[in-house]
Length: 388
Image (cartoon, rainbow, N blue to C red):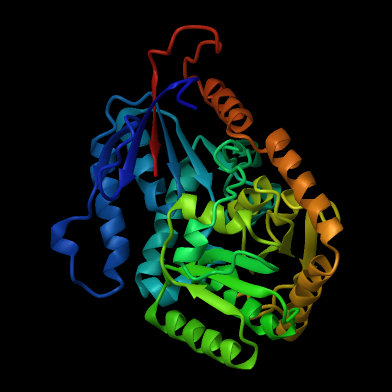
């Protein structure tokens, strides 16, 4: 993107080494140490500081509810277009109330205000576009544009090394089934843990799962992992947040990658696995079917949302059995697994590289009036600020 347009990134947290990061922000110190509900107030304090720092922007582009409110305020303050990318939607993540308490009402407010006031909304999948209009009927469908997420295929290339595997105590040979994701209801880890006893006992299960939403879900996953280890064995749980290079090596040696999400507007981690030529088993939900080709780059497991507020599968036992069946199908047919992996890599390069995604995004900025010269021209004088 920075090759096409002048970008300044305004981000949460500690300073980043990238020259594109113009500023980073910390929550107000006065809001530290309060109940979990105060987390939403901390986010809003960062939004206020971000909005104050965007006076030079010709367009602002916010990502998720964490910065949608900052983008909205900048639009009002400086009379510039606001583009909001939806990676998920708060009304469809009711389990966030476990993490935020009453602050969940504030996250809903920030997202609704930002999206309904945005000049354009980027949905990361066709499924997400439908969800946006379903959750926020006041939004004009003409303002919603589908632009998928992407990755750098050069960065996600096969790593033949084994130093990370050895350091983490993971097998360097044999069949492995890998999960990578946060410990949250959304990622469906508890359903994978129900499926693992039905998976080929010769396969080693690797769970790269950390950053739990709450102590309660961390404890629940801990109990399930302990039970599965006792019943089946051959399970490794890495609770740490690993560096990207470490995850790449783990995935490079995987026989199957599994994504059991019950809510997944896009599912970037599936792209990462496919780029590394790993066949994928994933839930048939959200934006995942736009990434994983059923019978082409992996297997999709039917998923039907239940009626409870957390989106639990209507048939949890059936969903777990479906995950296990699809995993075993690939483990038993290594030739097909290799073919799926190769097809997955080709699909990522052709359709989900950052160069293609960036070009579509800049086209949208042009439509909103930002002066962006053709790629062969000089760098633009207008500035776009990205809020993350």
